[in-house]
Amino acid sequence: MDAELFPRARTEVAPGAVHVPDWLDAGRQRELLEACRDWARPPAGLRTVRTPGGGTMTARQVCLGWHWYPYAYARTVADGDGAPVKPFPAWLDELGRQAVTDALGAPTSSYPDPCSYDIALINFYDGDARMGMHRDSDEKADAPVVSLSLGDTCVLRFGNTETRAKPYTDVELRSGDLFVFGGPSRLAYHGVPRVYAGSGPPELGLSGRLNITLRVSGL
Image (cartoon, rainbow, N blue to C red; front, side):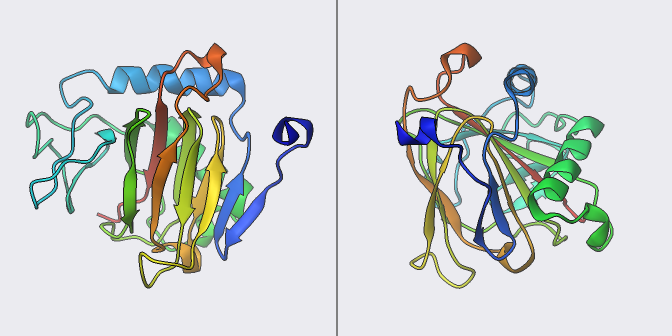
């Protein structure tokens, strides 16, 4: 396949939005997967997110640092078992800061304080899961959002800040890929219209896709 014969290049999808292929090597992917498996265990474990209108998200989620539920943050799993949210580890903050530096070429110190990553939203997608177009707008800080992919390949639809409709760009995210969006793209609409079931690296041992999203709460 052409995708295997030619290295994928770092791409600026929109101003402030950058895709860095293969950012996590195989060893780091395994480490991150094992951590996700620990975080997914109850209490405050992997859950189905219910929307105010009575629907459910097809991707299941677990949170670290602050618990997100539509459309607010809490210190407990307010829409689940009520347990305290799992702590956000310092090494994830370091990983997020390095991701911003590598993707955008600017350290997080160039953004207004506070700029310590303190939220992780970890979404699990099986082959039928999707994520509709939305904005990450419940935070009080404008630091870039860091997105890490493990397992099955997906299509990330990255749009504009005004509407859920076109213009948008579809980006293929594979296991180990990094996607960062900040600056003028911080509030861009984005979603996941498709996951390619069974496309992840067999050696990782993950059936499905994990997306680890790191954010600065400003709370």
